[in-house]
Amino acid sequence: MSPAERARKLTSGKPVAVAVAVGLAIGVLFSLAAGGEEDGYEVRAVFDNGSFVIPGEDVKIGGVVVGEISDVDLTEDNKAAVVLRIDDPAFLPFREDAQCQIRLQSLIGEQYIDCVPTRPRKEGEPQKPELAMIEEGRGEGQYLLPVDNNVTPVGEDLLRNINRMPQREGLRLIVNELGAGLAGNGDRLREAVRRANPALKEFDGFVKVLAEQDRLLGNLIDESDRVLASWVDRREETAEFIDQAGATASAAAARGDDLERNWERFPGFLRELTPTAERFTALADQMTPALNSLDRNHEAINSMVANTGPFFSAATPALVSLGDFGNEARKLFPAIRPLIGDLDRLGRPLRPASDDLAKLFGSFDDTGGIEELMQLIYFYTGTVNGVDAMGHYVRTGLIVNGPCLSRTQFASNCGSTLRDGQQVKAAGPVTREELKQAFPERAVAGIDLDDPEIEPLLDYFLGSGVMGGKR
Image 1: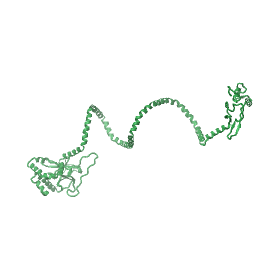
Image 2: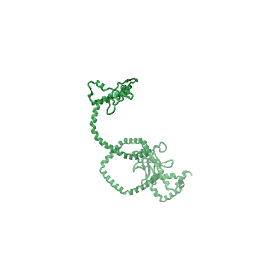
Image 3: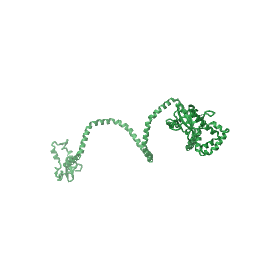
């Protein structure tokens, strides 16, 4: 059986199907009679069912008439294509998220098209693209609004007619006859039913969102139980918080103008804060490796911090003593400040001499002058010294009880040894008579050489007498 014959069989004796066919036919006749005017902006809206929709009926947006139905056509997949001519440019253009639905205008079955040119969007969200224009073929020059965007609700008059005879019997026959055909088109039927009821479509989306968020909702309920339990335990604090919040709100209301000015300045503050926040971000990025290193060594750091307690306890007496010293120094330093000033004034004239001495000693050090001076002292001392069987002695000094001056007779080996090994024989000890002959005035450094009390002491020092029983 061909599709045409099956359609004739299904529609025979069925008032609803006949009404649909008659409506489409009337729409086509009105379209032909209109002469195909193409004035204005035309939208080709596709619906699953366009029964009782005829050209000339209103097209409304938000309850305002903005145009009319200019044509009713049938698509290749047996959908109703309703051409809407929009005359008010304030509602143009239609975009890809536009939506239209067929609504009942009166109880006698008149219908109109209610449209939304575009959906509301959030601030900053870009607009959807405009509807695509049909370039060629049926509907050329019109803007296509696909069937997925449109809604075809079941009219209230049709629902009421179902309960009447003979429509009730006709519906029963249609259901019986179309059962086999609908069984193979379940998906398409489900889509048609969903598009027929906008509330069902929105509710289906709501259920889908709930299904995706069921885990979060379950966690929310569990956490809410725990929060409410803690809240009950601290309800007195909550009541106090509400009281304080009331007082805070009253104070804020009294300073409403100041708060309003603060909020007016807040965007500028945020703009000025942005560079600082960016620097903090860069600082945080640079500090991350250091913080990670500290985290890896946190045990050693904690141990060090714990050990600093005994260290500071032991250091406390020293710090106290240092504080006492500081108190004393606070008294001492003002007292020695004049002395420091005197030393400063003394040091300024000595600075040139110090520079000269520094250069002299530096020259001595660089040229080996210290070593040469020590050799001079060593060789000069060896030259003027005398030597005998007991050892060396100094000729030019007065050595009490010296090895050469304490004897009464001259020793042949009491002489001076020069550097080359040559010996010079000593002249021997000086007697008191020789000393008197050398000083005719009989006085040496104010000492009378003829004084009886001086003679024993003089003999002792000349090595020719004894003093105190010792030579």
